[in-house]
Image (tube, rainbow, N blue to C red; front, side):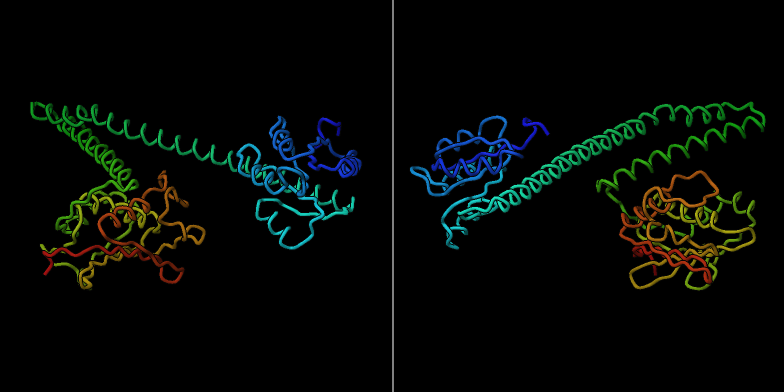
Length: 381
Protein backbone atom coordinates (compact mmCIF):
# COMPACT_ATOMS: atom_id res chain seq x y z
CA UNK A 1 0.00 0.00 0.00
CA UNK A 2 1.45 3.37 -1.00
CA UNK A 3 1.41 6.33 1.39
CA UNK A 4 -1.63 7.98 -0.20
CA UNK A 5 -3.70 4.86 0.30
CA UNK A 6 -2.82 4.52 3.99
CA UNK A 7 -5.46 5.52 6.59
CA UNK A 8 -5.16 9.13 7.75
CA UNK A 9 -4.93 9.77 11.52
CA UNK A 10 -5.20 13.14 13.24
CA UNK A 11 -2.99 13.47 16.35
CA UNK A 12 -4.06 16.13 18.85
CA UNK A 13 -1.71 16.97 21.75
CA UNK A 14 -0.14 20.17 23.04
CA UNK A 15 3.10 18.37 24.01
CA UNK A 16 5.67 18.06 21.21
CA UNK A 17 7.24 14.97 22.78
CA UNK A 18 3.91 13.09 22.83
CA UNK A 19 3.31 13.97 19.18
CA UNK A 20 6.83 12.75 18.28
CA UNK A 21 6.23 9.41 20.04
CA UNK A 22 2.89 8.82 18.28
CA UNK A 23 4.26 9.76 14.86
CA UNK A 24 7.10 7.27 15.24
CA UNK A 25 4.68 4.51 16.30
CA UNK A 26 2.31 5.12 13.39
CA UNK A 27 4.61 6.20 10.55
CA UNK A 28 5.00 2.75 8.99
CA UNK A 29 1.29 1.99 8.50
CA UNK A 30 -0.50 5.35 8.64
CA UNK A 31 -0.44 8.92 7.38
CA UNK A 32 -0.50 11.38 10.24
CA UNK A 33 -1.51 15.03 10.56
CA UNK A 34 -1.04 17.05 13.72
CA UNK A 35 -2.94 19.68 15.75
CA UNK A 36 -1.48 21.19 18.96
CA UNK A 37 -4.71 22.63 20.41
CA UNK A 38 -8.47 22.21 20.35
CA UNK A 39 -9.21 24.90 17.80
CA UNK A 40 -6.64 23.49 15.41
CA UNK A 41 -8.05 19.99 15.91
CA UNK A 42 -11.55 21.07 14.87
CA UNK A 43 -10.18 22.82 11.82
CA UNK A 44 -8.01 19.90 10.66
CA UNK A 45 -10.77 17.38 11.35
CA UNK A 46 -12.93 19.12 8.73
CA UNK A 47 -10.22 19.23 6.07
CA UNK A 48 -10.83 17.09 2.99
CA UNK A 49 -10.14 14.21 2.95
CA UNK A 50 -11.40 13.73 6.48
CA UNK A 51 -9.19 11.79 8.89
CA UNK A 52 -10.07 8.12 9.36
CA UNK A 53 -9.44 8.29 13.13
CA UNK A 54 -8.49 10.87 15.77
CA UNK A 55 -6.11 10.35 18.72
CA UNK A 56 -7.06 13.08 21.19
CA UNK A 57 -5.39 14.32 24.37
CA UNK A 58 -7.66 15.68 27.11
CA UNK A 59 -5.55 18.15 29.08
CA UNK A 60 -4.75 21.02 26.75
CA UNK A 61 -4.72 24.80 27.30
CA UNK A 62 -7.84 26.62 26.17
CA UNK A 63 -10.27 24.09 24.72
CA UNK A 64 -9.72 20.67 26.34
CA UNK A 65 -10.18 17.29 24.70
CA UNK A 66 -13.65 16.75 26.15
CA UNK A 67 -14.95 19.90 24.45
CA UNK A 68 -13.19 19.00 21.20
CA UNK A 69 -14.89 15.60 21.25
CA UNK A 70 -18.28 17.13 22.05
CA UNK A 71 -18.03 19.52 19.09
CA UNK A 72 -16.78 16.79 16.75
CA UNK A 73 -19.79 14.63 17.60
CA UNK A 74 -22.17 17.58 17.23
CA UNK A 75 -20.95 18.29 13.69
CA UNK A 76 -22.62 16.11 11.02
CA UNK A 77 -19.43 16.32 8.95
CA UNK A 78 -17.19 14.80 11.65
CA UNK A 79 -19.51 12.87 13.98
CA UNK A 80 -18.72 9.50 12.40
CA UNK A 81 -14.93 9.83 12.78
CA UNK A 82 -13.74 7.46 15.56
CA UNK A 83 -12.11 9.27 18.50
CA UNK A 84 -9.67 7.59 20.90
CA UNK A 85 -8.62 9.55 23.99
CA UNK A 86 -4.92 9.24 24.95
CA UNK A 87 -4.36 10.91 28.29
CA UNK A 88 -2.62 10.82 31.65
CA UNK A 89 -6.03 11.06 33.36
CA UNK A 90 -6.64 7.55 34.65
CA UNK A 91 -9.62 7.88 36.97
CA UNK A 92 -12.76 5.87 36.19
CA UNK A 93 -14.91 9.01 36.06
CA UNK A 94 -12.54 10.55 33.48
CA UNK A 95 -12.81 7.53 31.19
CA UNK A 96 -16.59 7.37 31.70
CA UNK A 97 -16.99 11.00 30.73
CA UNK A 98 -14.93 10.52 27.57
CA UNK A 99 -16.92 7.51 26.46
CA UNK A 100 -20.21 9.26 27.21
CA UNK A 101 -19.16 12.09 24.89
CA UNK A 102 -18.85 9.61 22.03
CA UNK A 103 -15.23 8.38 22.11
CA UNK A 104 -14.82 4.74 21.10
CA UNK A 105 -11.80 4.03 23.32
CA UNK A 106 -9.69 5.44 26.13
CA UNK A 107 -5.92 4.83 26.52
CA UNK A 108 -3.84 6.06 29.43
CA UNK A 109 -0.25 7.31 29.35
CA UNK A 110 2.41 6.06 29.28
CA UNK A 111 1.24 4.28 26.16
CA UNK A 112 2.26 0.85 24.94
CA UNK A 113 3.02 1.01 21.18
CA UNK A 114 1.70 -2.51 20.49
CA UNK A 115 -1.59 -1.78 22.27
CA UNK A 116 -1.98 1.55 20.46
CA UNK A 117 -1.45 -0.11 17.07
CA UNK A 118 -3.82 -2.97 17.91
CA UNK A 119 -6.59 -0.65 19.11
CA UNK A 120 -6.24 1.58 16.03
CA UNK A 121 -6.29 -1.42 13.70
CA UNK A 122 -9.40 -2.88 15.36
CA UNK A 123 -11.34 0.39 15.38
CA UNK A 124 -10.46 1.16 11.76
CA UNK A 125 -11.66 -2.33 10.79
CA UNK A 126 -14.91 -1.77 12.71
CA UNK A 127 -15.35 1.63 11.05
CA UNK A 128 -14.76 0.11 7.61
CA UNK A 129 -17.31 -2.60 8.36
CA UNK A 130 -19.86 -0.01 9.49
CA UNK A 131 -19.30 1.99 6.31
CA UNK A 132 -19.75 -1.12 4.18
CA UNK A 133 -22.95 -2.03 6.02
CA UNK A 134 -24.25 1.53 5.58
CA UNK A 135 -23.44 1.42 1.85
CA UNK A 136 -25.21 -1.92 1.53
CA UNK A 137 -28.18 -0.52 3.45
CA UNK A 138 -28.36 2.49 1.14
CA UNK A 139 -28.09 0.22 -1.90
CA UNK A 140 -30.88 -1.99 -0.58
CA UNK A 141 -33.05 1.05 0.15
CA UNK A 142 -32.42 2.29 -3.38
CA UNK A 143 -33.31 -1.11 -4.84
CA UNK A 144 -36.43 -1.33 -2.66
CA UNK A 145 -37.48 2.14 -3.80
CA UNK A 146 -36.96 1.15 -7.43
CA UNK A 147 -38.93 -2.07 -6.89
CA UNK A 148 -41.79 -0.17 -5.24
CA UNK A 149 -41.84 2.35 -8.09
CA UNK A 150 -41.77 -0.49 -10.65
CA UNK A 151 -44.61 -2.24 -8.83
CA UNK A 152 -46.67 0.96 -8.74
CA UNK A 153 -45.98 1.54 -12.43
CA UNK A 154 -46.97 -2.04 -13.26
CA UNK A 155 -50.20 -1.70 -11.26
CA UNK A 156 -51.00 1.62 -12.95
CA UNK A 157 -50.33 0.16 -16.41
CA UNK A 158 -52.39 -2.94 -15.60
CA UNK A 159 -55.26 -0.86 -14.30
CA UNK A 160 -55.22 1.39 -17.37
CA UNK A 161 -55.05 -1.67 -19.62
CA UNK A 162 -58.01 -3.25 -17.85
CA UNK A 163 -60.06 -0.09 -18.26
CA UNK A 164 -59.03 0.33 -21.90
CA UNK A 165 -59.95 -3.29 -22.71
CA UNK A 166 -63.56 -2.56 -21.83
CA UNK A 167 -64.04 -0.20 -24.80
CA UNK A 168 -63.42 -2.76 -27.61
CA UNK A 169 -65.27 -5.36 -25.55
CA UNK A 170 -68.43 -3.28 -25.84
CA UNK A 171 -68.33 -3.96 -29.58
CA UNK A 172 -67.51 -7.67 -29.11
CA UNK A 173 -70.47 -8.04 -26.74
CA UNK A 174 -72.92 -5.71 -28.46
CA UNK A 175 -72.54 -6.54 -32.16
CA UNK A 176 -73.50 -10.24 -31.98
CA UNK A 177 -76.76 -9.33 -30.23
CA UNK A 178 -77.58 -6.72 -32.91
CA UNK A 179 -76.92 -9.22 -35.69
CA UNK A 180 -78.96 -11.90 -33.94
CA UNK A 181 -81.91 -9.52 -33.62
CA UNK A 182 -81.89 -8.86 -37.38
CA UNK A 183 -82.63 -12.56 -38.02
CA UNK A 184 -82.22 -14.48 -41.29
CA UNK A 185 -79.36 -16.51 -39.83
CA UNK A 186 -78.53 -20.19 -40.06
CA UNK A 187 -78.29 -22.30 -36.93
CA UNK A 188 -74.53 -22.42 -37.39
CA UNK A 189 -74.28 -18.62 -37.58
CA UNK A 190 -76.47 -18.24 -34.50
CA UNK A 191 -74.23 -20.71 -32.65
CA UNK A 192 -71.07 -18.82 -33.55
CA UNK A 193 -72.52 -15.41 -32.70
CA UNK A 194 -73.73 -16.74 -29.36
CA UNK A 195 -70.23 -18.12 -28.68
CA UNK A 196 -68.71 -14.70 -29.44
CA UNK A 197 -71.21 -12.96 -27.16
CA UNK A 198 -70.64 -15.47 -24.35
CA UNK A 199 -66.85 -15.17 -24.67
CA UNK A 200 -67.12 -11.38 -24.55
CA UNK A 201 -69.11 -11.50 -21.32
CA UNK A 202 -66.61 -13.96 -19.84
CA UNK A 203 -63.74 -11.63 -20.71
CA UNK A 204 -65.62 -8.68 -19.21
CA UNK A 205 -66.15 -10.71 -16.04
CA UNK A 206 -62.42 -11.51 -15.90
CA UNK A 207 -61.52 -7.82 -16.26
CA UNK A 208 -63.97 -6.79 -13.54
CA UNK A 209 -62.68 -9.51 -11.24
CA UNK A 210 -59.10 -8.43 -11.88
CA UNK A 211 -59.97 -4.82 -11.01
CA UNK A 212 -61.77 -5.99 -7.87
CA UNK A 213 -58.77 -8.11 -6.87
CA UNK A 214 -56.50 -5.09 -7.18
CA UNK A 215 -58.86 -3.03 -5.01
CA UNK A 216 -58.95 -5.80 -2.38
CA UNK A 217 -55.15 -5.98 -2.27
CA UNK A 218 -55.07 -2.24 -1.63
CA UNK A 219 -57.88 -2.39 0.91
CA UNK A 220 -60.10 -0.18 -1.27
CA UNK A 221 -62.88 -2.63 -2.14
CA UNK A 222 -66.28 -1.78 -0.67
CA UNK A 223 -68.32 -4.94 -0.23
CA UNK A 224 -72.12 -4.70 -0.55
CA UNK A 225 -73.49 -7.88 1.07
CA UNK A 226 -76.87 -9.25 0.08
CA UNK A 227 -78.59 -12.60 0.54
CA UNK A 228 -76.97 -15.05 -1.89
CA UNK A 229 -78.44 -18.50 -2.52
CA UNK A 230 -75.35 -20.70 -2.80
CA UNK A 231 -77.31 -23.59 -4.30
CA UNK A 232 -78.16 -21.41 -7.30
CA UNK A 233 -74.51 -20.32 -7.50
CA UNK A 234 -73.38 -23.97 -7.47
CA UNK A 235 -75.90 -24.80 -10.18
CA UNK A 236 -74.44 -22.14 -12.48
CA UNK A 237 -70.88 -23.27 -11.77
CA UNK A 238 -71.71 -26.92 -12.42
CA UNK A 239 -73.17 -25.97 -15.79
CA UNK A 240 -69.99 -24.01 -16.55
CA UNK A 241 -67.68 -26.93 -15.73
CA UNK A 242 -69.89 -29.72 -17.06
CA UNK A 243 -67.63 -30.46 -20.02
CA UNK A 244 -64.58 -30.77 -17.77
CA UNK A 245 -66.44 -33.11 -15.40
CA UNK A 246 -67.65 -35.27 -18.27
CA UNK A 247 -64.20 -35.53 -19.86
CA UNK A 248 -62.69 -36.63 -16.54
CA UNK A 249 -65.64 -38.81 -15.50
CA UNK A 250 -65.84 -37.08 -12.11
CA UNK A 251 -69.13 -37.03 -10.19
CA UNK A 252 -70.17 -34.21 -7.88
CA UNK A 253 -72.65 -34.37 -4.99
CA UNK A 254 -74.13 -31.51 -2.97
CA UNK A 255 -75.45 -31.87 0.59
CA UNK A 256 -77.26 -29.39 2.84
CA UNK A 257 -77.03 -30.21 6.53
CA UNK A 258 -76.30 -33.84 5.68
CA UNK A 259 -79.02 -34.42 3.06
CA UNK A 260 -79.39 -33.90 -0.65
CA UNK A 261 -81.25 -30.59 -1.22
CA UNK A 262 -84.90 -30.69 -2.23
CA UNK A 263 -85.94 -29.04 -5.52
CA UNK A 264 -86.24 -25.29 -4.92
CA UNK A 265 -84.41 -25.47 -1.59
CA UNK A 266 -82.13 -22.54 -0.75
CA UNK A 267 -78.98 -22.08 1.32
CA UNK A 268 -78.30 -18.41 1.97
CA UNK A 269 -75.17 -16.51 2.94
CA UNK A 270 -74.43 -12.81 3.22
CA UNK A 271 -72.03 -11.76 0.47
CA UNK A 272 -71.83 -10.68 -3.15
CA UNK A 273 -73.02 -13.12 -5.77
CA UNK A 274 -70.16 -12.40 -8.19
CA UNK A 275 -67.56 -12.90 -5.46
CA UNK A 276 -69.24 -16.12 -4.30
CA UNK A 277 -69.43 -17.40 -7.87
CA UNK A 278 -65.77 -16.57 -8.61
CA UNK A 279 -64.54 -18.01 -5.31
CA UNK A 280 -66.33 -21.35 -5.55
CA UNK A 281 -65.65 -21.63 -9.28
CA UNK A 282 -61.91 -21.37 -8.57
CA UNK A 283 -62.09 -23.86 -5.70
CA UNK A 284 -64.15 -26.39 -7.66
CA UNK A 285 -61.90 -26.14 -10.72
CA UNK A 286 -58.93 -26.78 -8.44
CA UNK A 287 -60.73 -29.79 -6.97
CA UNK A 288 -61.37 -31.13 -10.49
CA UNK A 289 -57.72 -30.66 -11.46
CA UNK A 290 -56.63 -32.53 -8.30
CA UNK A 291 -58.99 -35.45 -8.93
CA UNK A 292 -58.42 -38.60 -10.94
CA UNK A 293 -60.85 -40.08 -13.44
CA UNK A 294 -63.81 -41.77 -11.77
CA UNK A 295 -63.39 -40.02 -8.42
CA UNK A 296 -66.01 -37.94 -6.61
CA UNK A 297 -66.19 -34.37 -5.32
CA UNK A 298 -68.61 -33.48 -2.54
CA UNK A 299 -69.93 -30.09 -1.44
CA UNK A 300 -71.43 -29.99 2.06
CA UNK A 301 -73.29 -26.88 3.24
CA UNK A 302 -73.78 -26.64 7.01
CA UNK A 303 -75.42 -24.07 9.28
CA UNK A 304 -73.41 -23.33 12.40
CA UNK A 305 -75.01 -20.55 14.46
CA UNK A 306 -74.37 -17.26 12.65
CA UNK A 307 -71.97 -18.85 10.16
CA UNK A 308 -72.40 -20.95 7.07
CA UNK A 309 -69.70 -23.57 6.60
CA UNK A 310 -69.08 -25.08 3.18
CA UNK A 311 -66.87 -28.17 2.83
CA UNK A 312 -65.43 -29.06 -0.57
CA UNK A 313 -63.84 -32.51 -0.55
CA UNK A 314 -61.83 -34.39 -3.15
CA UNK A 315 -59.48 -37.37 -3.05
CA UNK A 316 -56.43 -35.42 -4.18
CA UNK A 317 -53.65 -34.43 -1.79
CA UNK A 318 -52.03 -31.00 -1.58
CA UNK A 319 -48.24 -31.49 -1.93
CA UNK A 320 -46.31 -30.89 1.28
CA UNK A 321 -44.04 -28.40 -0.49
CA UNK A 322 -46.87 -25.87 -1.00
CA UNK A 323 -49.13 -26.49 1.99
CA UNK A 324 -47.88 -23.50 3.97
CA UNK A 325 -48.21 -21.31 0.83
CA UNK A 326 -51.41 -22.79 -0.60
CA UNK A 327 -53.36 -19.52 -0.42
CA UNK A 328 -50.42 -17.31 -1.46
CA UNK A 329 -50.11 -15.50 -4.76
CA UNK A 330 -48.72 -17.34 -7.82
CA UNK A 331 -48.53 -20.76 -6.13
CA UNK A 332 -49.02 -23.63 -8.59
CA UNK A 333 -48.10 -27.32 -8.64
CA UNK A 334 -48.53 -29.79 -11.48
CA UNK A 335 -51.67 -28.13 -12.84
CA UNK A 336 -53.29 -29.64 -15.92
CA UNK A 337 -54.14 -26.13 -17.09
CA UNK A 338 -51.90 -23.14 -17.66
CA UNK A 339 -53.06 -21.23 -14.58
CA UNK A 340 -50.73 -18.71 -12.98
CA UNK A 341 -51.59 -19.47 -9.36
CA UNK A 342 -54.23 -16.87 -8.56
CA UNK A 343 -57.18 -19.23 -7.94
CA UNK A 344 -56.74 -20.04 -4.25
CA UNK A 345 -55.17 -16.63 -3.58
CA UNK A 346 -58.19 -14.80 -4.99
CA UNK A 347 -60.53 -17.23 -3.18
CA UNK A 348 -58.92 -16.26 0.14
CA UNK A 349 -59.22 -12.55 -0.67
CA UNK A 350 -62.88 -12.94 -1.70
CA UNK A 351 -63.74 -14.91 1.45
CA UNK A 352 -62.01 -12.41 3.76
CA UNK A 353 -63.57 -9.45 1.94
CA UNK A 354 -67.02 -10.90 2.64
CA UNK A 355 -66.17 -11.38 6.31
CA UNK A 356 -65.35 -15.06 6.01
CA UNK A 357 -62.40 -17.43 6.29
CA UNK A 358 -60.93 -20.26 4.26
CA UNK A 359 -58.71 -23.16 5.33
CA UNK A 360 -57.98 -26.79 4.45
CA UNK A 361 -57.05 -30.23 5.72
CA UNK A 362 -55.17 -32.70 3.56
CA UNK A 363 -53.75 -36.21 3.97
CA UNK A 364 -53.02 -39.31 1.91
CA UNK A 365 -55.68 -41.22 3.83
CA UNK A 366 -58.58 -38.76 3.66
CA UNK A 367 -57.79 -36.54 0.65
CA UNK A 368 -58.35 -32.78 0.83
CA UNK A 369 -61.19 -30.79 2.38
CA UNK A 370 -61.51 -27.03 1.97
CA UNK A 371 -63.45 -25.19 4.67
CA UNK A 372 -65.12 -21.91 3.71
CA UNK A 373 -66.92 -19.95 6.42
CA UNK A 374 -69.23 -17.06 5.48
CA UNK A 375 -71.80 -15.00 7.40
CA UNK A 376 -75.31 -16.49 7.21
CA UNK A 377 -78.07 -14.41 5.71
CA UNK A 378 -80.94 -13.30 7.92
CA UNK A 379 -83.12 -14.87 5.23
CA UNK A 380 -82.01 -18.26 6.52
CA UNK A 381 -84.65 -19.88 8.69
